[in-house]
Image 1 (tube, helix red, strand yellow):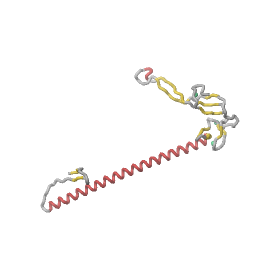
Image 2: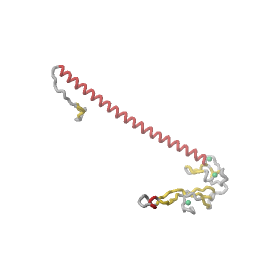
Image 3: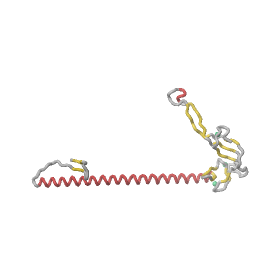
Length: 184
Ligand SMILES: [Zn+2]
Ligand SMILES: [Zn+2]
Ligand SMILES: [Zn+2]
């Protein structure tokens, strides 16, 4: 049977025969455009969990014992075998766990996710650093070649001057292996 309020079928059994509706329902409310047309949508939609509690016959045996909150249990924790109600337990990988053991699993997962994220970021920055370093080294090597070329050209011109050939004071430097003019 569906929820008597919203007819949703997503639900949690809190206690044998006692259910909480977990279905999402959409609520309409007045938007800004309702009073002043053109200023926004006339109707806004909010989503919330229904939360309606209702009674319905259950196949869960009613004699599983009591949860620590004195509610009839719907099952046992897979880790500590304590009887638990639906409010103080949850399903983890299709295994019912009391809220304490559920918390342990949840925190382990949060920690594992955080570790994975940290590893991912570290790998990203390592890659980024390596690329930046390679680019810097390449640029430094190019500058060194350029500097060397300028020095050699000046040496040749100075030598020509010394030998009395004033030659041209203008010269051009091309990037090695290309027609790209660096300077002149
Ligand atoms: Zn409902
Ligand atoms: Zn309980
Ligand atoms: Zn437990």
